[in-house]
Amino acid sequence: MPISKRLLLLASLIKDANRGVFDVGSDHGYLLLELYHRGFKGNLKGVENKVGPFTNLTNNTLNTPISTSLSDGIDDLTNNYSCLVLAGMGFTNIAKIIDKNKEKLNYIDQIVIDAHNFIPESRKYFIELGFKIEKELILKENNIYYELISFVKGHKDYSDEELNYGPILLRTKDKAFIEKYEEINKKLSELLDKIDVKNTRYNEIKKEIERNTLIISK
Ligand SMILES: C[S@@+](CC[C@H](N)C(=O)[O-])C[C@H]1O[C@@H](n2cnc3c(N)ncnc32)[C@H](O)[C@@H]1O
Image (cartoon, rainbow, N blue to C red; front, side):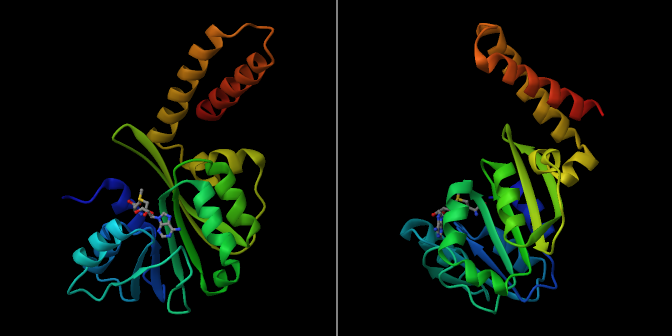
């Protein structure tokens, strides 16, 4: 099966200078295999906490230097890895994985995430843990928008607008970014048509549409 555009873009965010990549929720191991085929020089480890995906991961990575582990989140993370990948998960799960072993972030220089929801909260969460946003990419695949974020150690202040839309996505304003907010606005407008003007949500939705319109037309 050809690797998805999303995983190819995730791979492109990972620095080759890392000691190693620790991929939580590796599933079939496609991201690590892509890095291996690209000639990534550091250690590669895939972690799964479920037997089915773990079996796929170990079978797919046989005869490669990729190591695997059936364990929870970053329980097995060591100093051999400096890049942490958390992709294809909801923010609640991501935060749960980190909160369980926060001290292990001392090993980590780069975190690459693809959170499937609560993206502004995800930005805020890692920024509060001492990371700053280094790169952001947005793409649409199979009718779903994905925002991929690379954090590196450091401090930077962000406005609410930057946390919400993404500081880099706001600057690059890619086609997918514009389309995403056009689609959101279309859905919100349809919702607005069905809501009574006296409903408290009415003004909130109206403001959100106006804010999105301003952002994409700036
Ligand atoms: C939707 S898949 C995403 C796979 C791959 N990372 C990607 O982006 O395509 C999420 C994977 O994370 C695994 N997972 C979820 N929570 C986990 C945890 N706490 N520790 C290890 N793996 C976890 C699931 O078993 C599942 O295979």
